[in-house]
Amino acid sequence: MPRSEAVFPAGRHALYERHGYSAAVRSGDLLFVSGQVGSRPDGSPEPDFERQVRLAFDNLRAVLEAGGCGLEDILEVTSFHTDPEAQLETVLAVKNAVFPQPPYPAWTAVGVTWLAGFDFEIKVTARVPEAA
Image 1 (cartoon, rainbow, N blue to C red):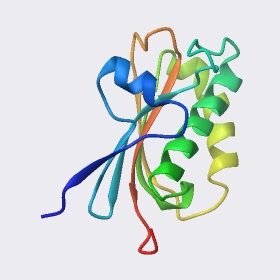
Image 2 (spheres, helix red, strand yellow):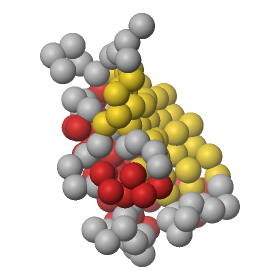
Image 3 (spheres, helix red, strand yellow):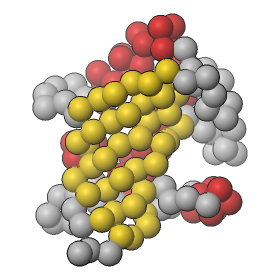
Image 4 (cartoon, rainbow, N blue to C red):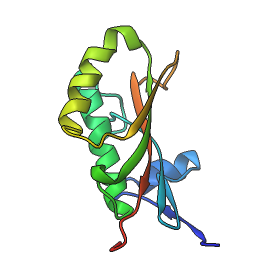
């Protein structure tokens, strides 16, 4: 059975260390990415919702890259929304730019009441390409 290995994007290890979790865990050819939010460089939430969603995807890309993956390797997505009805149009516009064509990953969207000051969070499972 393969050993699991923690994965961290460059420059953000301290954030995860402070909170006691890994940005992602690689086990065999799977990468399990923890929820990513649209945080500014100082860790605070980006106040503009669309920019917050875009930053969350940027942070997701960085973790995927650190684990040897890209957006095209994502199998499954779970997103968390503080106001799904009001936010859906914006999230879909960003999602459609990130995933412009099939095959699309499986996706589950969940409405929540609290995301530590953020309004959107995205977590994924990806398959690590053989070359990685």
